[in-house]
Structure formats: C-alpha cells, structure tokens
Image (cartoon, rainbow, N blue to C red):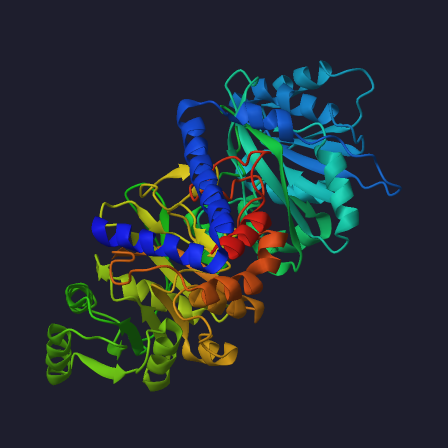
Length: 598
C-alpha cells in the first residue's frame, strides 16, 4: 500500500513538471505544503487551547446596528418556575441592556409564585413599564400557559426566553435590520452559546446551518427563534404547547431566516419549562404526521437520541455497484448485503468496467449462476458516471441505490432506513453514515468549499461526537451526500438526467445531488444507515484534471456564496468543525489554486 501511494505521488510530481514547467510546479508544491501545514496548525491550536472561543469572540462579537425608520416591537414570553426566580434578574437585565428599546416581556407563572416575582420587578429601575406579569388562574399549570400568554402578548414579533437566558445587547437591533432586509421573513433564528454558572463566561457555542427541516427532527434549533406574531398564533391554534407551536409554525411558514451570529446565551442552570434543546416524542410524531407519514414511532438509542421510523411500503430497490477488479472487496460487499438485508426486496446489478483479473470473472460467473446478481459490461476506460447510468438504465426497481464496491454493511436495517425516506416526496436523495475500518467517521454529509471543491464534514471524528456544529448523529440536510451509498427514486434520477458522464471519477455524485437540490428536493443524511467504507482501496491514482476543472466550474458559485447547510463561522480548511480564523485562505481562492496546480 505505501509503495503504491509513493509511486502515485512520484508520478504526480513528474506530471506537474511536464504539464506546468518546473517553476509553476514548484509553486504548486509550496502551496500544497503550506495548506497541509496550516491544517496541522489548526489541529494543534485546538488541541493545546492556543485559540479559544474567547479569542474568536474578540474578533467576531457583533456590534449594534443603527435603528431604521420603522419601529417594530419585540415581545418575549418568560415562563417562571420557583427555582428560576433567582435567575430572572439576569434575563431582564439583558433586555434592559438592548440598544434597541422597543421590547416588552411577559412573566408567566402559576398562582403562588407572584410574591417572589414582584420583588424582582420592584428592584428594576423606576419607570420600567415594559415588564408585565401574567399570573395564571388557579388550576392552570405553567405547562399549559403558553397559549394564554401568547394571546396576551401583542408585540409584532414573539420569542421565548428561560429564566437565566440572556440576549446579546445588539440582538434586537440586528433583528430589526434583518426584518427590513428580509421583509417576507416569518421566523428568524440565530446561533447560540452557553453561560457559566456565574453567568460571566460564554462557552460551548452551537453554530447552526440555514433552515434544515430534517435537523429539526433531532434538535430544536428554533427554541430561541423569534416568530412573527400572526404566524405563531395561527400555529398555536392547533398546538397549544410552545414546542408544538414552534414546530407547526416552522412547517406552515414559507420564509425562515438564519442569522449566523451568536445572539442568545443559555445559562447553565437556567429554567426553561417551555423549551428544550431536544424535542419531545409527541412533538416529533405530530410534526411527521402533518407530512402525511403513518405509524410514526420514536426509538431512543443508547445515548438518548431519538430515532424516527414510519410505515414503509415494500418496494424493489436496485443496488447498482460499479466494479473493476479488487474482487476481495467486492466479495465482502456482496456477502454483507446478503447477510444483513432481510428487507426490503432488492436486486444487485454489477457494472463491470475494464477488469482484467481471472478471479474477478470467476466470481462474476458464480454470482450470475446463483442468481445473486446481474452483470452488465461497460467497455473502455473506467467511468464511474457511465457505469451508474448503465446500471440505472437496466434496473427494475423504482428505488435506485448507488453503492461502491468497497462498502461493507455492518448492521441490519440499513436499507429499510434509506428506503423509508423515499416516501417523503420532498426528499430527493438520502445518504447514510460511513465509517472507516477503525470506526472513525468517513462520511456524515458533504460541505461545499471544504478543503477545495467539497469534502466530508466530521471525517475522522468518533461516532457520537458533538461539538461546535452539533452531533454527527443528528438527522441533517446537505447539498450533497456521497455516491458511495446514495438512494433516490427512479423518477427523480430521470428528472435531473442522471450522472453527468463528463465526470469520469470524481464529483459526479456531488453534481447529481446539487442538480436534485436545484430541482426543489431536499438531500437528507441519516445516521441510522451505518456502513463501513474502505475508501479508495479499489481505485488508485489522482483525480483526473478534467474532473477538477469541470467540478470547479460547476461548484464555483456555491463555494463563493457559502454552503447554506454549514455555518460561515466554521473553518473550511479542515473537515472537523472548528472556529474559522481571520487569516484563513478563502474557499474560493483555495478552489482556484486547486484548479491552477491540479
């Protein structure tokens, strides 16, 4: 293996010199070395604590914006439990510190808590008229008080705060500016972080993607959003509790805006009876049933993360595997499918492209004779896109699963999990979690502009890892997932024209996903289809220059604008989510250098 990689590297250097000349090839080597060293430097900074969130805040903490002509009012509902009264002062102080003055707060509490709350209000500066009390009638629990509070609040925009939670001083001025920039917005959410017990230190930020419906199945990243009053009231007519209303509102509205700034700070000991980071089972069931899914079930895994299932109608899945020699990997792939795929019904289609080894053809004959797989032959040099298109052309199933021959299925239920998403007509492509042989993450979604054209976020992390971008084990939306294991409905595949055969080896899967997304479908990553990927073991050599050029041409616009399903506060120089540094090479500049130096 090492000798082959060394030989490939030597061939690449010779190719550079022949194609670009010695001087330009030397520039390319220098740039590649600089890029590799910078990645190691970032990793070292993170590991040794040389660059912290506090350092990042000194460079990126937002400044207040000047108020424009319109005068919108922001209202905040604050449910108060007895143990939260002590933290209420922090929350009210953060509202009073706002540079934008038009806000009101409604303190909602059960009978018997009023005296302690009145003492907090009495300590406020004289003349503070923006804080209101809403004592619930006898027999009404605080958990049932959201609808009552919402009817009382008549501000233009409504949010919910827990006792101890704080708003950034610039938050309301930034909200008002965003509403004028996005006049059709009905929900606005931001990034958030945590406060230490004494409330003086900010830590553990959660940097969120733009609107991601499937992420909402794992985490309520809208819990601190502000909602247009009319939209939230309409949703609350059908879901009286706060979380249910937030989820229903997210489904009903047409414009949800993400501001990638850390404007909410959650106190470590704060009390949030109406909102939590992880949604309740009943909320999720209702949310999915509103989509028309039936027999929705929630299953808690060993880490307490909810996995969702719904009724799956049996449908034939055509598993399409392009292959060229490396028969040991192919045998492992086929055997693992047969052993760990009791359902749904499937067929295996092998697309042979330019194999030469006798043992490969002997195995093909064995598979055909036993009826395990059908064999198609594609002549000429290896072309991943053409092989997949040929397989799709001869497939009998309405569901197409494109699978690499160096994949190993490691647990049952993987194909059910992928096929289940095909019922959701808004979803065009679904991909699963890939693990390296050592158990580390190989694929959990693709981010454009990461390390060049696009790359695998979370790669190298452990399963269950949680950090600045949340957990690798959450449902997510992306612009693309890897073609090493990618399922889609036949009709969607045909609608977008299949794989672009101008890509011979790399980027055609990403390009296909992007065209599916541009056609109006969502791309879904599920962590519950787990497979092992012996990445690159069956193909050696560099990415063809034509693929590099075409990929850059295709993806340049997205790389320049930024991937909506990542976060601009996170570095694109490395695959593991980490804070972006001000001295980083821009993603577009990096892409141009890859094109320049190959």
